[in-house]
Image (cartoon, rainbow, N blue to C red):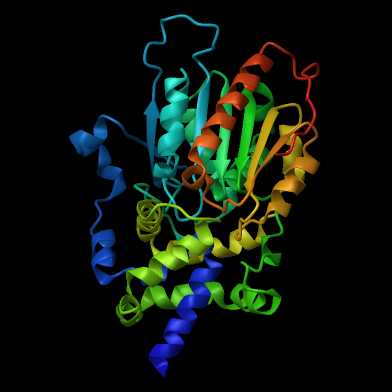
Length: 371
């Protein structure tokens, strides 16, 4: 019976963990591999990684892994301002790899691209659990910008928790937004109110998830026997959970596995430590810093983690923002609707480029468009 209670607690925890729904189903093989991962502070000692990655040290000493794609030939001319840098920020329990296709397309269009791994995610280092907050992520992004892109125009693109981190950045550094940011794209994210989301479980069970989820995740992280019991559930159950909370419709199995592997690369205690800040996130007022900036909002109509109402609220709060509703899609739009997202981001970047020559006060905001 105790094993069954452990699995029930695991289910509650992974549901509360959003797209990390299958994190508790990781095998002990995955756990061992994750704990044996080299210290990210030494990634530059790896010749392969040195060619495509660098490390930025956060204000509290946490090493943040960042990959940068420079324009192929910045000396060749075009009307496009090749100095513009696009910062792609991933979401909760993911890594910079979520942006693989968008990153390639944007780079091929002539932009400079910067892709960080958030603290505790991907190849970045771990901080104290008390530092796993949206506010700290905003400070981390400020450090990444300072050390990788100290000048030039910026376009900020954030998915899920990455979008929330951009709101924290704007809250902390409004002058940076006014002086350098020419575009902001918010994908499957929210300015607040996630404590009301029931994850498609109904009001009562959704409330139970909110009350017990963080504690359940913490308990599972401390107990190897729960991992071993959960392993018996098999990969099919694991994939079904990942699919339900990541996507709105059918996607290839390898895409589901890709998301699962990103989830398994995130320690359970990191997942649990971030839950409170996600539930407490309320930065609707911080959005004022984006007024007058070319803004794109992309949201899936079947997003169970941040329902479409959150995207609609963003669009209502930001006059002139374009809202693109992706019908039938779920939370992980970079992988579920990559071609559509590519098209929307490239069109958005073109609009942002055109806006560079306009002053902030004179820049036309345009009408909101929903699809």
